[in-house]
Length: 349
Ligand SMILES: Nc1ncnc2c1ncn2[C@@H]1O[C@H](COP(=O)(O)OP(=O)(O)OP(=O)(O)O)[C@@H](O)[C@H]1O
Ligand SMILES: [Mg+2]
Image (tube, rainbow, N blue to C red; front, side, top):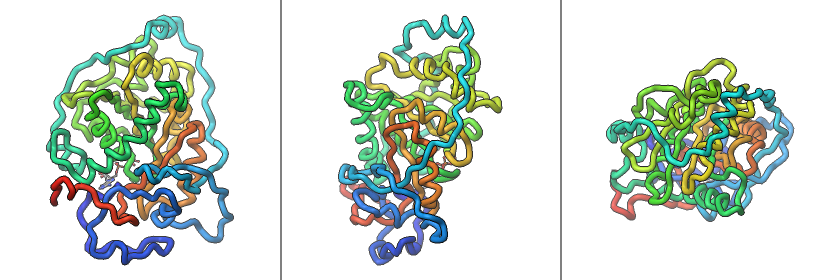
């Protein structure tokens, strides 16, 4: 994913000796497809040489079909504690025994397109831009995996996608919202974007939606049906589930047996529906690793020149509850392949 911010006069030198000449003279470019090679290493801050080598793991870097080869990244044992299960109350059992919801209810809200544009987000019905093209490629791989899940050949819960990153500010919300907007544009896909950064929810303000009860409320109170908390939008196929009221025991709520039941109500019997979770930073808060147990795909956002390799390895280790983890390189200022989207369709800046 390219940096959508103001252009820099010159691309700063990259870690790992990536040739700055490649970037010279080019505007900040597009999706960074660090794939198929060690290219991503040039984008993250290098490991402290004094520290021992971290064993590699195979995590495919997403962003391009050619990037599907295994890329050595990191693995570590899951060290996050999973909270004890809670026993569901009789009321909860009654509600959860109901057939899974097929259609979302809830109030529909207009989304201010200018507000999206001002934040550098994809604008539905807007022109084809480099950003739009980048997310078209990113979503394709995720949707393919979701379809495989529905066909019985993909990972369990492959229609649930966790967007995470090691640390704050690496672009999780930016990528989650753009992914949701891009997927909603698919003719046969319905997207539910869940604000799962409970300590610092920002999906509602990013989309300009009003606050209200959300996932945490539905988890905490069995009388609340999660589908009643969902907000509809005037973007066809896009729905939003707010984070809800944080209580200080969010991770315990997420670790309860009720979580699986509530999340099942969002995806069961809903062909073509994808749920995207915009999570908290993995190394700063525990909910992301608890949620990783309930999703079939995780996208770890790596911010070029910001995320360190050690932090990335640590974060991936904490997400190991999810069997399909991919990297998304965000805010890159050059493309090793020289690829540029947008201009082909007449996109101009
Ligand atoms: N590719 C990009 N181009 C331009 N701006 C970006 C890009 N990615 C992220 N940003 C901007 O960087 C800032 C931080 O991004 P964002 O809020 O998505 O990060 P985050 O990982 O969700 O942070 P937090 O952990 O605090 O929730 C935002 O202002 C966002 O608009
Ligand atoms: Mg965020």
